[in-house]
Image 1 (cartoon, rainbow, N blue to C red):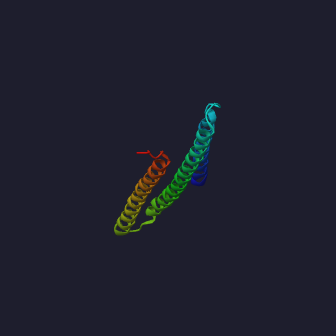
Image 2: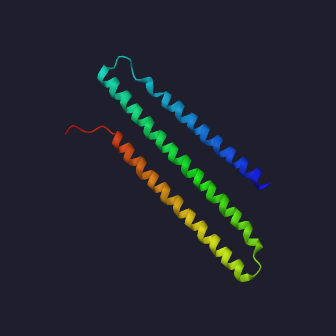
Image 3: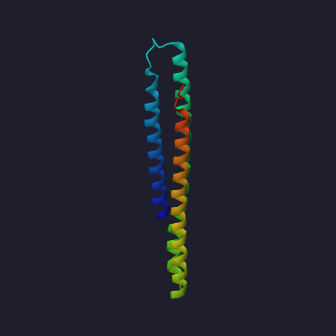
Length: 136
């Protein structure tokens, strides 16, 4: 029963990621709207910027997918451990298993926030690298 629920959740997550990918792909497809009368050097710079932007955005989506998969896997493991708590035979064993699960959940939560922060920092660095350099 839980496998079916987790399978449905995984499929929904994959469908959401696919929908977001298609949406961003459509947005990126709108970029070629640069006027045809633009000079050749400007057109080349615009195409170069568009390629760098698409690469940075693709990397960001890939890292987001990897983080989501890791979070999902950790969540499934915590759910499995939560069901194992019921097998405790003594109050001390119940306390120990509950404490272990609690620590594991907060450790996973800390990892998630750290990974999100690192991802944000990397994205900001990439976006800043795309900004044109001023000629002062």
